[in-house]
Length: 488
Ligand code: ADP
Ligand code: GLC
Image (cartoon, rainbow, N blue to C red; front, side, top):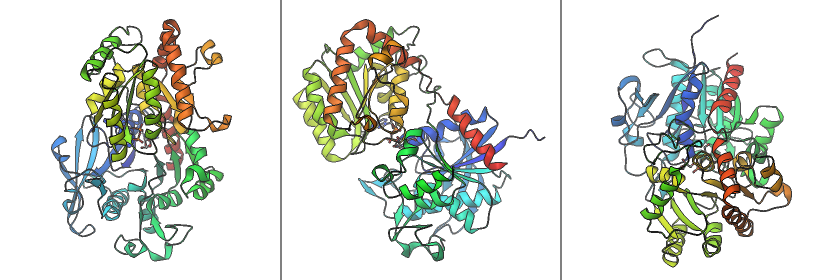
């Protein structure tokens, strides 16, 4: 028996700490270390956006193509904080102002080409390996941005197994069939059983059809995906893969080396055994936003400001929460209407509401450390990481009972409190006839305020939250099992 590590190529559009717009980056950046312990060596292929190459340590040429969808491209290998990276340096696609997907609030118009190119290179590396002869046993792709890898492999007749993980089915990678040729995709496979989604090409659907297996990031979301309410038109494909036993939910974990209140350089250290400094972090957060000491809990919100995240529910509910003694700090950016609404809330309650519009990683850490509550009223949430950071840092989660939120937070019902399993507050569980709305959120916040007033119960709840195992341990094992099955 060979003792060589198995190799997985992970193809993704973002990876923490190099570039991050959301949870996808955290997951892509955290999985390699967890998988390494289980015998899987990872390399991550991602675009060399501006400033990325400067952050990696060594950068050797691993692959090149003088004409990658209209321009020269080089893949450079390098390392950054223990991650083995393959960086796709293709200036005509990735060297430009803006974020990975947008500039000034609009999608880059050539996103289909940019990410088809990433996927194309992923397939080439899977088939032919790098200059230093690294060739993966399996390719792990994420969301629509790398959804075409399994298709390119299939059209080339390759048998390298592929796993697609769906982090959010709402983003589908759509473009017109007129681009098929340019993106090296065959027109004969443009039909509803393969690449076509209502007259357009969907790269996510392509991945869902062609990948050897499909996973998503929580068991509840895996079920939800098969319904019209959550499937965004792809519920049929999801059901098809699910019925064949080829789709499952594996819950995300968090990187507890980075997210550890006892060792986090952004906060005053504390732990479940010695939580004293949690109060100092709270004080510091209040001071940072010039807020008054509230009678009730200090809530934090760290999020993209979008409809998915239920920001409108917060705008409706927070005035009542503040009048009942709460305070809140919000960090996020996104929809201008929500940014504006939050600004108004802060001017109406200047001593109880702090708002920071923007993206600020260290501030997010200070908020989880300083908060008594973290609020996540999402309409749908494939997994959600902010509630996991909240658990770890003792900011008790108040969440909508959907997707991964439902799988990771145990509601403080009398029964769950009595048996010591409660870790937070949930609302709007459709299986119990609830719906995710302002009334439900408001009721959950009321319960949180009441419990906060009862010091002893509060501390017990917080301690259970902090002890919740949220690391990658179990879930990395499930990925490794699945990988092993695929390469057998
Ligand atoms: P999603 O990926 O849908 O945005 P997740 O809860 O999975 O949701 O992940 C969000 C991640 O992005 C978390 O790590 C969160 O702390 C971070 N985040 C979101 N908005 C901001 C922001 N404005 N500043 C700093 N971090 C943010
Ligand atoms: C997506 C989802 C989020 C999930 C993250 C990482 O962005 O919206 O729920 O936690 O991916 O899987």
